[in-house]
Figure 1: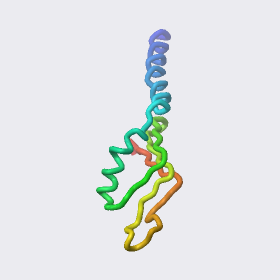
Figure 2: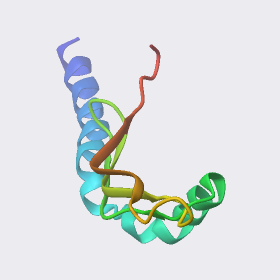
Figure 3: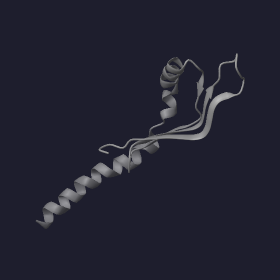
Length: 94
């Protein structure tokens, strides 16, 4: 029984360790050219993002730094919305 528990703990560890380490090696900034045009088209405004980070544990989340949505130039040259950091956290099962 003890051997089965050790094998199960090792298997769970093999699943958790990559989930903790993988986001460090995945650069979501490389995909900005794919998702920013979708956001701009949906909002009808220019969208700019500095850095994009991914987190898997304890809950999956994506964080954007220096996030800015431009305003319509007819109304204002200042941004419609800007934030130093914006995050989206998944509440799976809640």
